[in-house]
Length: 214
Image (cartoon, rainbow, N blue to C red; front, side):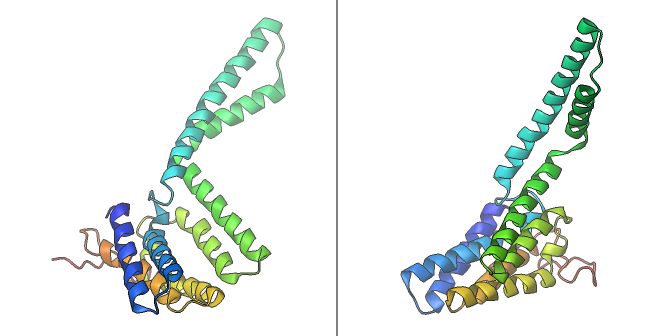
């Protein structure tokens, strides 16, 4: 299911929470934001709205690595034939950059960038002594390396996300943040269960996909 669809569903979940819990305008904005982010979070294990811009950046880095490696190799060859001298350090740098450009896929770079953001969140969580933020950072750093519709699309990830939401609710002192975050995340799993591929809710205990369609 498209990320835009998950985002729309998450926004509706947040709006429903704003109506259900004691209404305050600033709280309504938080409910919608939390539910919308939660509805997208499960797809951190693949290309999604959350890391779309990182995909563009990773594509640029991938091509830059390739061209930089080629240009450095050409420069090294020019110096060798024009000056009849070999520069081992220059050659090693050119070879390393070229090999990295050839061996590193755009997806790998995107995952690394997402993980870097997650580690930044972990660091900030430690700095301000907020455990929920540390846990969120670990989730963001870990999720990109998982198989798509794998562990992030399970009831275990849903429980973990609810726990992170509980930490946020405790910090903000706003009733219903945990339920809103869990409902937003669950909306993603339910929506994906309406597709032919389904969702492995109990993976790895039960590897069979569950589908809510005939």
